Amino acid sequence: MDMENEILIGSVVGDEGVLALEELARACGAEVEWIVELVAVGVLAPEGRETTDWRFRAVDLTCARRVARLQRDFGASLEAAAVMIDLLKQIDQLHARLKQAGLNVD
Amino acid sequence: MEFKDYYKLLEVDRTATADDIKSAYRKLARKYHPDVSKEPQAETRFKEIGEAYEVLHDPEKRAAYDQLGNRWRAGQEFTPPPEWAAGFEFTPGGASAAEGAGYSDFFSTLFGNFARHTAPPRAHGEDHHAKIFIALDDAFHGGTHTVTLRTPQVNAQGQVVLRERSLHVQIPKGIHEGQHIRLAGQGAPGVNGMPAGDLYLEICFHPHSLYQVQGRDLSLSLPLAPWEAALGATVKAPTPTGVVEVKVPPGSQSGRKLRLKGRGIPGEPAGDLYLVLAVVLPAAETEEAQQIYRTMARELAFNPRHSLGV
Image (cartoon, rainbow over all chains, first blue to last red; front, side):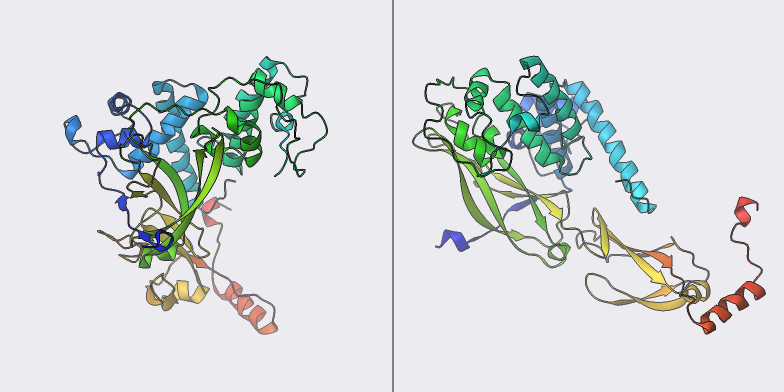
């Protein structure tokens, strides 16, 4: 088969929890323990009660990778990165509301 | 290949001390970090700054870079001199292949052979990530998208080279911004028989000329004539799946939202399409039009500033 013309079909990581703990850790190039900590401080909120049942969504993947970058690039602690994430979310929400109100922020 | 002026990128003199360079980098990193910055081109700038810092904060790389001298200017066409890096012995442990992914060809050419990618003897391949920009239309109808990736690879000489590869990916109907398509086995190869990593493609939409997108919901600004807004009317509105007729209730003002349920991005449940009403005034360029406005002014007891108390 001509590899160049093959159409790849992936799975969607979307609004429903699909990624297991190990999968999310690997996607972030991080250790499982680090993900567990992110859940403990409330940055990530997986579906499922036990760690083995945890399933993460697209927002968790985006958020965890963001925290990883903030920690790496600013030498931030996990708590500090978590605060940054909260503030960034608030700013995004405010921007969205300004945009809805027809005000351009940029 | 373009020459990069790393001193200029970090906004420091060629005589800057190690401390100057570090503090310049820290300041600029905070300004342009793509996660916190709203500056245009933040991501590109941040990569350039990181690359400049990677070279200038390392005494060996800086000395080698300085050897190129003042002969080059930023953006100038550059080929490394034949004696490049002669007499320099580099310590391994610079940028790893993965970190080097965002660096320029200029960097890879000069410092590519610094990189040592030391993987454990048996290791699962790393997952890779990329963003892809698709048309909003693809979310409605599905489609295929060709993504070209530049993957850093360590060649037989131990140098990091960028290899381009194209993948054709199916875009499933109903996908929306912020979701990811996960392609199993398309990440970094595994070491010694371990499986390859996966490739995650984060979905972004190209900006659309009509619709604003929020999650699965769309919004569209729908212009109305004053009489349509005031008296109510049935008007045509475009949707991504075709033109529909919409009933505008009498007494509508600009900013009022009409929701067309299920007319957003398909899914379970499908998103909604919000029509944001915008009353547009006809120009008063002709005598006739002016006459009508004058009649309204005379006949309607209307003070638009009533709520301001004036």
